Length: 235
Image (cartoon, rainbow, N blue to C red; front, top):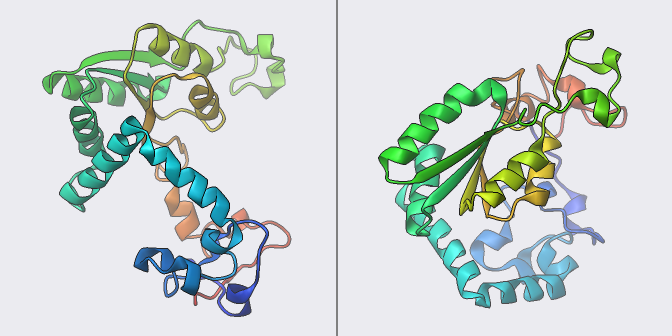
């Protein structure tokens, strides 16, 4: 189990929010007392103006509805529903009828199962594979030696094409299934509909990326950079 540093850094004034440094025993935001009890890097102390501005976004009825439905699903399915069911319930409660799936070609079987499950709940499904349009990697400046299999035809992933196709076919909610790092970023940049992730690509860990972080003091200690800590103590 990864452990964390505690101590004087909790009282430091940071220029940027640093919630990831907040230990379990502090987390004043969960008690509604951030402005008083939050550490020096708490957003409530670092940048209360931005937080106030962000809160105004919830005055938009659609934004407020999405946030409310998300909270209701969190409660209704807490520790009982897998993420796939949470996606289904979110789509139902938001009254979305057309679901777009942007899937990795290696996970099309998984995407197919999820498509069938969605249809069983009455949704219309549009699905697009990452290799759509078969764009040669060379067109993006990838050298043959940089391919997964040099000397062969390799199409690049085309997340922009995935997003634009789902846009063109009027998806109301997009679901990502295993897009690569960076490709998922491009998809979010070009997609018009709200987007959630069902599967995160991690070829080494069976798509369970958090395992490497949970073992960062052990099996995956090579994640640390030259100036990193091999062992960090939790406060």
